[in-house]
Each structure stands twice: as C-alpha cells, then as structure tokens.
Length: 74
Image 1 (cartoon, rainbow, N blue to C red):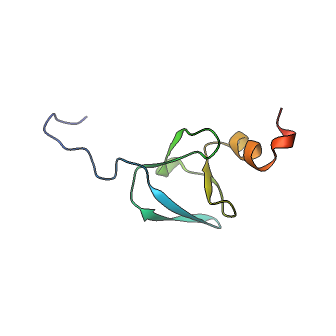
Image 2: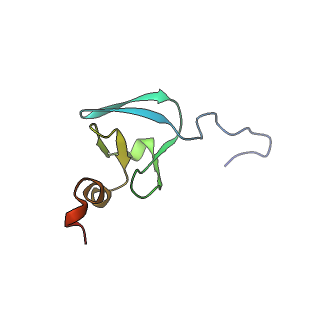
C-alpha cells in the first residue's frame, strides 16, 4: 500500500519488450505489456505467451489461438 506521500514507481507503466525464442528482453522498463488480442494488461512476471514472428504478447493460450489461427476459433 502506498503512503499518500509516496510517488508511483517509474516502472508502473507499460513496458516495451523484444520477444525472443524462450525469453524476452526489456527495451523500456515498465510493469506490464498489453495482450495483442484482448488488450488486457499482463504483468511482466506473469508473461508466458508471445510470438517472436509478430513481436506480440498474449494473455492466454486462447488469445494465441485467436491470433495465429482465427479460422479455427469459433
């Protein structure tokens, strides 16, 4: 909980990330990235799904399927 005199962390905003095979590199510090499909914020410590080819993060396996195989999603 923040004290009323505490300033928000400079890393509280959206991060810029370079997605690599099995890892990612933080280009601009932040606390989260946004799912490319749903737009929901994903805390960096919870980021598990992304596309190296499209350089996009995804919030869930369902979001991955919606992006990569839209014809198969009902």
